[in-house]
Length: 366
View 1: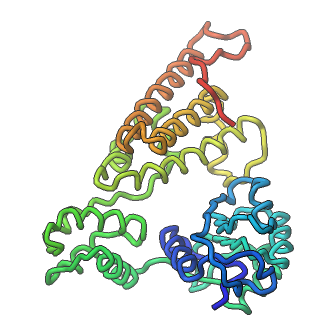
View 2: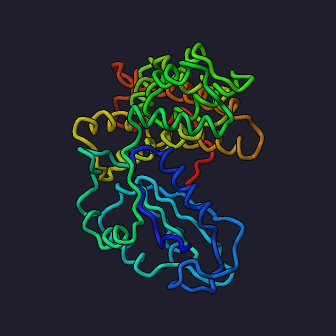
View 3: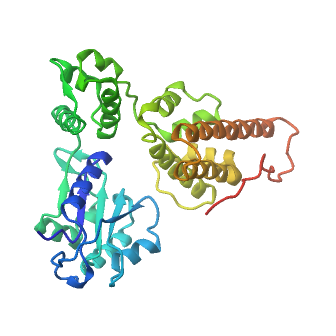
């Protein structure tokens, strides 16, 4: 069976989208290039697996994306190009993508993820995307997957399926009790089921174990950073970041992603670059960017990259990396807060000269 030339995933739930992509990639292993762009999967020689590359629509697509999208050759690597939050890409970028998709590459499988909400059963796709030829073509080929996320019934179905894959079974009344304590978020559900799997030594989840479900709402990373700057970081946030030690690095990498994207926005604001933000959000973000300054924002990047490299190199466990990241953020925001308070006192730095950073950025990486 031939694979899609490209796939458009429309779903607000990142975990459901990832599961869909995993299933498609497993069902369509990569094939050799000699079949040519027109055959899309008829060549007999199979490669071991897809090399998955992730990109974000919150920032310009790098040259590597365009190279992978179009590059062909005998020794090229089959790649799955996953573009997260693709609805945030500018209209001109979408036009360029649509033109490239008209000339399919047998060694590239683009997944364009529109992580948008649904209204009255229909996804809220931006108008400049909805009218593109690539969407009409994908619709005719049935290359578009849509899901509004999990509702009450969907939570129960996801729990049953995910529990079965882990060899879990539910005692009478346990499924209902667990589902009632879970949010309609596939990522959070998967994490909580991992905890229940460890708690259920014999593989059976009882109704009493529903009390182990301890889900907190998603982190508002900007509110979190503002709370740190004010010296009043809510304990609920730290509990969410640090609470799930049984879940390994499941929380750390999403947290790092949110932290780096927010820091990038603050850097753009500090540099005077145009950033599309709601009017109610723009002034406080500009203020936080000025308070942290270039050195402070660079330090956040350093801390996040140090945490990631520590885990990937094996030098630190996820728990150790998160603890060092937390300590570094506390120190950074405490220094920034003291500097801001000192500048506000009469007679302190009134010359108009910029205040020197309280520390060296320590190896800023681009």
